[in-house]
Length: 86
Image 1 (cartoon, rainbow, N blue to C red):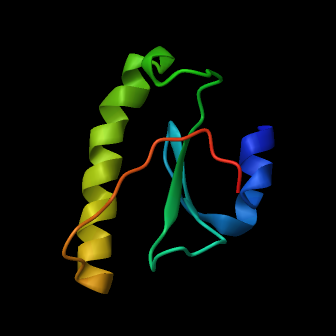
Image 2 (image 1 turned 90 degrees about the horizontal axis):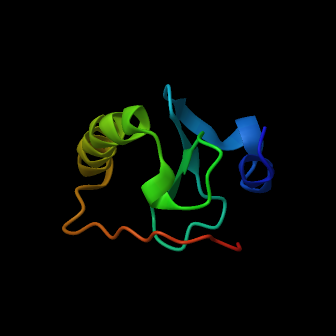
């Protein structure tokens, strides 16, 4: 398991595991429903993700939005792409 995966709580915070992604609950809930989407690819740049990872990304985002809309009826959703230091 990667250091990043462990830093964000490891298996304890995984909401759903995909073939190429982990969807994790963010321990620090800055806003209700804050999540972390962590790629399993061992890369440091988004552009280096495999094409299979990119293909699955669309499915994952659609699923996240659908479920968050159902759970929280959000009016907008923010995406931040960072090398995060929580």
